[in-house]
Length: 142
Image 1 (tube, rainbow, N blue to C red):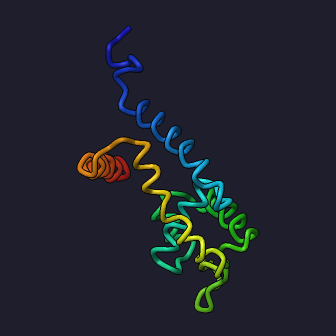
Image 2: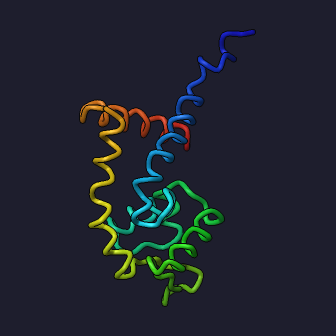
């Protein structure tokens, strides 16, 4: 077997495995909010930006509308977001937090710290890792 094809030599596999494990680590932390990890990501961007359209959320989360639309519908069914057509352009769906969705922000404040403790990374290591991951993302996307 060629060295380059060994699983242990693949960059993608540890990243894939880490992604799965991080999602699994979030699951018990998000139970009290009654949201899934992808729903939590949507809430994070809405807590930051307050109101975005579907395209903007998709760009921020690297999700296509086919994935995002059902996710947003489930958040709306939980009364966490409002989905409204733009008054300027009906093709644009604007997403904003409901009072219930906004109120979850305070409950979620402890979650990043809890996950960081599980990772055992120092602040500097987390900054470095985030920088490297973003460098790879920005390079591969183009």
